[in-house]
Length: 280
Image (cartoon, rainbow, N blue to C red; front, side, top):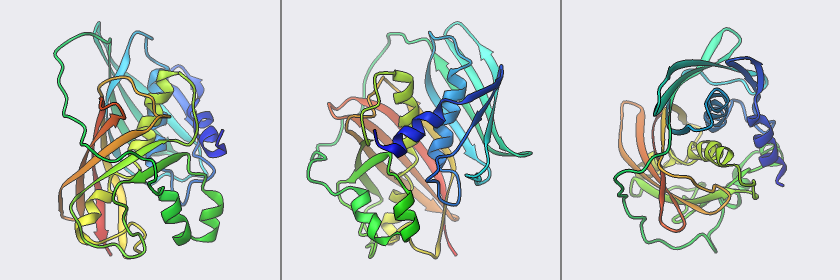
């Protein structure tokens, strides 16, 4: 298995400190700060360990409060807000030292039958033959970053951004993604790694109308908040399509909504993120 992906999975098996406190670690290829998607995935892992197995996560809403230091452990403290018959709620504070770096509320539900409809997946070309972001980005990254980063998730844009010379375009993008290798059949792990992947390309859609790349040294970018809704089970080690639309950028912030489809057209998750997109 891809070593970086294996490390992400190992780190997601949090160490239990007591009933509702867990210890996590950032991946060794983290660069300057903890990747937000890793915090999302580990939050779900912590909450999962406090839940009856009949319940499955259906939504997560979180705020990134401070950048995390990848050299320090992450402490996940779970508050069991409510345990109902159909729904349960967990609130999690992630801390380093004495300071909170992330706050999230997660809701779980016993799966049930109900009304169903979904927005159709756009008709787009498949991932075959598309260049990966790794291929596009690696020549532009510092040598130490190229050598350390392990690319646990493979992303392939349908209309790739020219990272070295980005041009203004529409405020949307479509990206195929999957884990770098197969990860087995544990549905909880697939849900956790879907959260991990959901944070990576999302804010890029807010840059497209402005002809900017996240590599621009004059640009300051950071996730402010992130929401994720799970609609059905998924396999994140098979190709999934991330459809992203940036509704607005204003006040140094950009808002992007996402839909995540399995390749067969099933809408398995929706996301929304507001992030800092500030020119220095």
